[in-house]
Structure formats: structure tokens, C-alpha cells
Image (cartoon, rainbow, N blue to C red; front, side, top):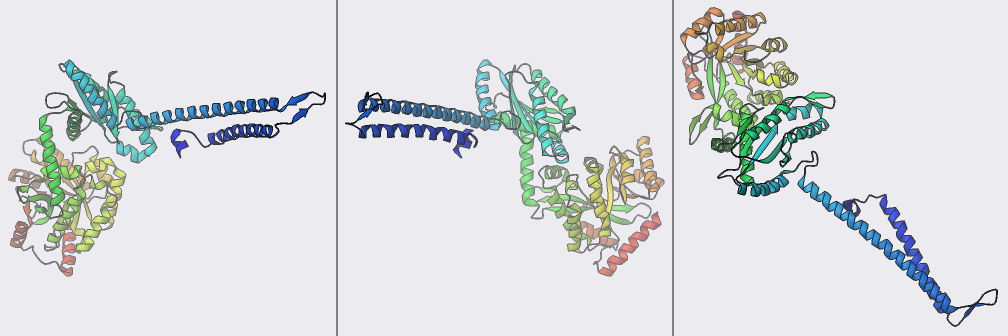
Length: 547
């Protein structure tokens, strides 16, 4: 075990052992010769010519041989000890290197960056200089790693590290902090921050270019957060924390860009952390509840369904809109748990409605990466005894752009169980027609940004007409959201038989208000099996009539 730690392989040990045996054998033979000579004291060895060799002469020769053997043994042990010392020094140097560097890229690790950065700050500040810290995170690295394997991922990390180091000044520090996150630090003139920005821009420009990895072209990108030493930031820990906060802001702003730290980012991060902690306690306790926005058949004015929207009924802050907490839930990995919790509550409520009413639920792009999403939804429907035909899952084009093949597999699984599928925010993506032809959709929802501009923008109105015509040609229903006044409703009525939703027909409301609305229209009933079956039949007949 010690031999391996010192760097000596198993093949070196037999050679060393044979040399030790040889030296020991010579020594033992010399000692035996001295002993035999000593026992022969008083005798004389007679040669053939009559001359004699005294025992003293023989003993002298034996002692000489013993000394030679001892010298050989001592020299051998000296060489062995010297070799072991060299191995120990090499092992210690290697251990020190491993303790301070990243084994994959050869860059510094987090600990070494902190130590060297602290020394660099001590050198820079007395000279009225400043130290810049760049925190760099690769965008879409996980996709490359998952698609092409970990070997390709390692090659990409090494190539990325070379690209990061290339534009740095000679006295810069560069480190890989773990995963696909890097950092670098270098002194600069505080009166010329453009020098720091030039380095960051050079790194971003290189990251936008493709990397040749294992015979394939990998495209990633990066986000960069920048902080500098200044009053209130004179330690390496504060500098690294601020640059990390700036990195988070750069990623939220759309990736492939840089951001300097400012104090507002820190306050925003504190608020985000507070929201995340609140969600972790609020989701299991049922604070995130469904609200329901009615969907109206424009031709008849009848309610044909509801879209489920999440609201946070906070015990201290009241009702919190989804724009505040949904992004945090998505980034923190809580979106799946939140969505299934809200869906469960919404389905439990919808069981008491007219069975002809559809329940539309949004699914985030993050959830569309879950290979078990369809099974989770089907399991929930089975547990609550809710007809699959009454549930509609809304997905966005953003979810399709990430991995269309994977998304299509999930959609096919949902459709096989009888669950309806709608494409949300239609018209805002890059290949809407392709998606319409490739996916077995039940409905498309025209993005509210187009609907809202219909009255004053002829191009927006024309686009809505085109989408409706295209969908009808493919036998796909259309929902127009964002209908906020009578003028928009009138324009949509001229286009065709549409389902609409928006403030003009009713805002999202909690379950108790929705029950009151349905009770007033005679659509609030206990869902018996016969009623469910009849409602589904009526729903299908209604669709055929509108078509």
C-alpha cells in the first residue's frame, strides 16, 4: 500500500528484493568465513610447495571480505533510502498538486483560488489597484454531456478551460470550481473597467463558437458574472459571492451575456431565497392552490372549461401572483411538486362540475424533461377517478425546442391515455407550422400578445386570422386568450367559432367563487359515473357540431 502511495509499482519490488537478498548473502558468507577462520587458530595451512599460510593471514583476508560486504550492504541501503525519499517527495508534490488543482483541466480548484486570490488582494490593494473576479457558467453543457456521453463532456470542459485562459493577462488566476462552473481573477486599473469587460467579451465570443468534440460540433455558450474589490468588498469570500450573484443575474437576463454586480442583485437574491424557503414549506401544507379562469364558447356564450392557474395564499402576505414564485419554483427544482399538487387540488374540485367541462393545466418546459411525466398524470387521474378526456395538458413551444423527440414521446403517451393536448402561446415560436403537422394536438392557444393588439394593429389581426384558418384546415380547435374587451371579442366573432378567455369574460377566481359561478349556471353537480359518461358524450357531440 505504501509503495503505491509513493509511486513505486509492483514490478519494481521483485528487483529490489533480489538485490537485498544478494547483499545479505554476501554478508552472511563473509561472516561465516571469519568464524571458520577464528576456529582454526593455532593451525597452519600448508601449500603444495611447502610454504605455509598463517591463520592470521587467513583471518585478515576474511575481515577484509567482511568489510567489503558491509560496505556493499551499506551502499545498497543508502541507495534504497535515497530512492524512497525521492519517491516520498514526488508523492507529496503530487498530493499537493491534487489538493490545489483540478485533475481534469489542470486549473486551480476552489480552495487554491481562494488562497491565491487572498494573496493577490493583499498585493493589489496597497497599490490602489483592484482585483476583478469573473464567475463563468457554461450554458447547455448538460445537454451535450447527456447526448454525447461523459467522455465528450470531459473533452468539452478541457476545451472550454483553454478558451477561458486564452484571453487572460499573464498574472491572472484561473480555476474550475466544479461541474461546468469556472472562475478567474486578475488585477486591473479601477479607472478602466473596460479592460475587464474586454476579457469577459472575449470569453463569451469564443463560447458562442462551436467546439469540435469527438467528431461532432458542440454548441454551448456561457454566462459571466463580474465583481471587483471596492469598499465593502475587500475579502476573497465576498468577491466570490458577489461575482456568483452577478452570474445568477446574467443567466436570468437571458444567458450568453455578462453582468456586473450591484447591490440590487443581492437584495433580489435574498428575496428569491426567502420565496424558495416559503415554497418548500408552503407546497406540502397546501398554500399553493388552483384558481380557475373560464373558457367560453364564443358562439353560444357557454362555459366549456377552465384553465388552472396557481396562486400562493400566503398566511402573512395574502395572495401572491404566479409571476413571483413560478420562476423560483422552476429554478429550484420545485416546479414538478408544485404542479402536481395544484393539479391534484384542481381535479378534486372539478369532480363536482358538469362532466362536459374541460380542465386545462399548464406544464412547464422543465416538467417536459421528466420521462415519467405521463405516468404521474395518469396515476393521479386513476387515484381521483377523473376521466382522462376532461383533462387538457398545455405545453409551450419552448418545451418542444429543447428536445422535440422526447416531447413527442410524452405527448404520445398522454394521447394514448385519452388526455387532451394543447399548444400554448402559439405564434411566438420559431417553427409553429412544423409543430402543428408533427404533433397530435387537440387545440392551439393563440398568444395573448397578438389578441390584445387586434383592434389597433391590422397585422396582428391578420396573423390571428391566419392561425385560425391554418388550425381549422388541420382540424385543430383554437383558443384565443387575452380577450379583455368587447371590441376584441367582436373581431374574433367575425373570424370563426372560437373558444376564448380573458377579463372580458371573467378573471381567474378561487374554487369557492368558481363553484358559485357554476351553480348559477346549473353546471355544478355531483359527478356520478353515469353523469360522467353522459358529459363526455355531450362534450364530443358539441365539438363535432362546432366543427
